[in-house]
Image (cartoon, rainbow, N blue to C red; front, side, top):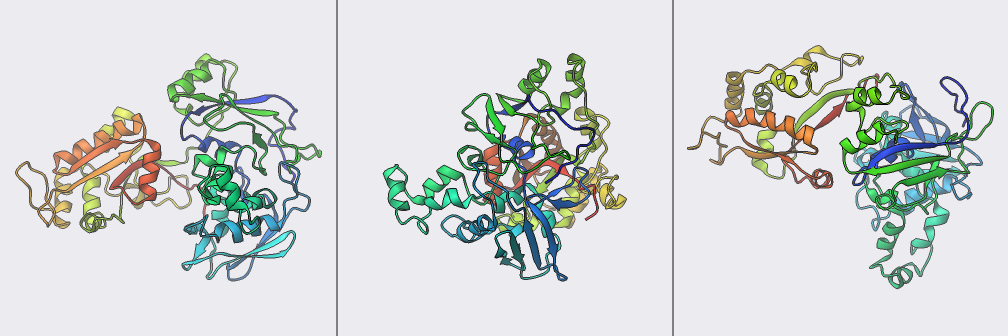
Length: 460
């Protein structure tokens, strides 16, 4: 694949230094050295283009997607990459109940999982049961690396289908089963949102750099150039230009900022962007990129509309209750305290987006406690207990937790929930560990969450 530079051709050599949190920060890998799906977004985010795939086409009903692979591509250990690797992922990982209990939503359509057909060594077809026009978009998301992340030549020996002694071998090595050994060797199948995927440097990859150690153990963790990387510049020189990537472990964001000020970071956005001015004032040798803001909200409040408790589920699904919560706190006061110059905004596309809708972006954002109580009444919340808390139809208090991660979000969230409590909602803001936050959402074991939110700037 030929990659055209934005300004000029590069020079070989050097190390790219970054700061990485010691726990649950593998998103930094995903965003810097781990994004090589079949299709990828253009740098301008204007659409998707072939990446691992040489080309692709869709049939007239958007049910079949044909991918032509790049002949001659190799894994980082030099072994060929072909349609057999994608077929191995499909047959032996995705459709193997011992490794995949649930097919991810983005690989299903009309409640039917994708079917993958090998046409020849370099052609595969993804078949869906109904039109799926957004598949190419989903394939370009970070999770889109799944079909091209399983080197069959390396992983087959861990599966009983290919190695009858797989179970015996696993138990000899101290594993409870061959499945446990597989996860220990490769990582958890089906999700990139798991640290185990980055703790196995021996597994061949298609990425530009190869980890030489285990995330969370080596400090710094070094990734070296992949000698079989399959991209070149317009003059035919193999990429990447940079020899190594170094991930220095830090305890928190302030430590990452300090590392940048001390010259320990070459280029980074994650963890240090809020301290850009402070860093540039100290580091005269550094310059900032002009970034296009893509967040629609710094704090998006989301109720669990599929709550396990039928009473809370019914309340949360009542639009009147949600509108009441939206009118029940003073956005302007919270913005002045925590993020001056920001603009109150609903969870909706930003003004720069062609999908921007002024009403959807600005509705229900005025602070009006009386109006909030009126909407609560429309949702059936008219009675209060002896301490002034609103009561559900079953006589219990309206009680729930809303969870977030990190001090800055938690402080803003506490300011919001203080307003809600004044109006009779028995809500508790919680700052939970990131692992717990993700596990609760995965297991549908939460009441509400507060998080940031992105807003697509391109038409879809």
